[in-house]
Length: 534
Image (cartoon, rainbow, N blue to C red):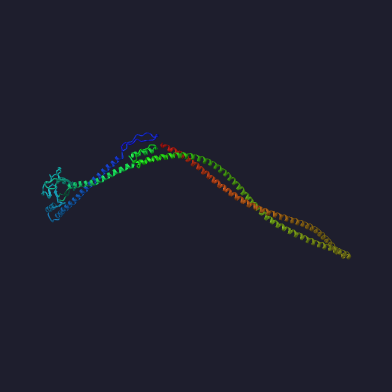
């Protein structure tokens, strides 16, 4: 594999791009390995340095405990002196002796010492009391006790680093001392430990961690090498080669192939090349299919357009039919209402005719009673006429007898004359009554005959009215049934009109969908034109 990327192959429609320079994958993995080594080295240094710091902290804590103990001893002697149990000089002497006897550490080479503000030794296992310490300095030229006194006076307590001999005549080794000011007696109490072993321990820890993490780093590098070889085997080449081929496919260039040997057929580049071939075949098939779909969608859209037009015409015709049926329904309903009203009137007429027949019957009965009464009146008139005739005869006889009586019968003759006149008037009245009665009887007989004829006519009319009422009832029932039937037909036509409207809307939607399908097929055909497969 080379660092230069292959020249990109594009379709005839793509502009020529300047070849880019890519970093091979093995270089990237090398950088990862280098970063891993540096990271492990940093971890080793950090862990070793932290271990060194922990050792320093441990030594400093030990010095703090030792100096605190020494200060506590000196404070106890000072308390004894303050209480008067012993003198101050004796207390200082005993305290100095106690400090000089304090040794610590594995080999007992570490000790506690003290000096006053004049830098004269107060307690020191290696120096005499009162010895001047102001000019003592180490191999680096540091005046050790001056530095200790300065730290104690300034901070009250602190650590001082310098060099001194572990044994007489030996080399000077690094040492760390903790000094603390005892103000009551103007002393500086200190204790020190050698720290040369800390550096040795630091180097030992550094070497140990370096070996452990170095072995781990070597293992990781070997794994990275194995991983790189696996990646190369799976990729079939460099990543930029796969990227270049995928960019060709992304630009629509499906004609540029990638030469692969048999060992790389099952790699990523082999899969990309297989994808390119399959995609080229797929795009070619989609192009042919989109052309067929476009033609079919155009025919479907035209057919749906014609169907939509015919459906709209049918919907308009159904709408007109529905309107006509609504008018016919209204007319039939009106006729049915009129027929029901006529039937009601016929029923009322039949009832009135029945009542009239009863009234006519009553009139006939009354005429019969009148004729019967007229006959009775005629009989009574005949009796009155007979009485008048007899009275007239009696009056004539009375007149004859009065004439015979002469003067004595004159008054009786006058009465007889008056009776005869009354009888004459009664006869005349009876004659008039008879004449009137005869005319009344004749008129009553004529009226009875006419009433009988009217009753017969009323009976015939009643039969006709009953027949008319039956016919009107039948017509009303038929009209109601016809109105219900037309209503059902109107409802069915309305449902057909609604379904036709829905069908028309669905046809329009289908036409729109067909048009959209045709446009999408056209868009698909235009979209695949960007692919170059030849």
